[in-house]
Image 1: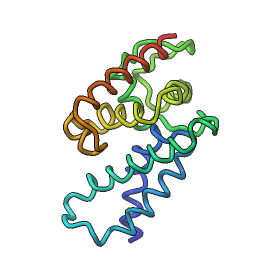
Image 2: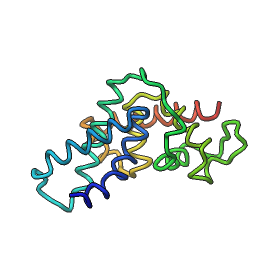
Image 3: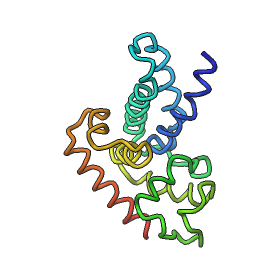
Image 4: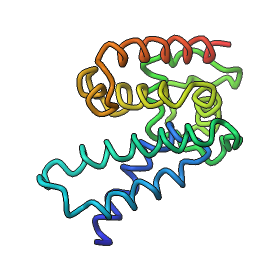
Length: 171
């Protein structure tokens, strides 16, 4: 069980961090609790990561909605892992005033802070779509199934999320 936990924690964190932001630790913990409670119901062990991803997204969005930005984001604690793909997709060449090329360093603390700042301004639903499409690499159909919304909703949310991210990123 500990080996499974060691493998799942980084994966779950990479999904929950950019969605739940300052409540990311709660989202990771709630996800892992839900996973281990329902582990016996997993019919296909080869689908473990897809199953865990669906639980992680659901929990991260639920917790982000609950918090509704009441808790300030702590950019220094926000890791850049799982977020550089978002900025690469959204036009990473734009500087946010730190003199860094945000597309080249995945461990730049300024990059992590800038990404956290921009993501915090997006709705949990928009953050979830960005993570699923631009970090996890799911297509619209897969993201729609995971989120329980129509494919057209995913497309419109993704368009709005990317546009909002770009607009805030280039300021």
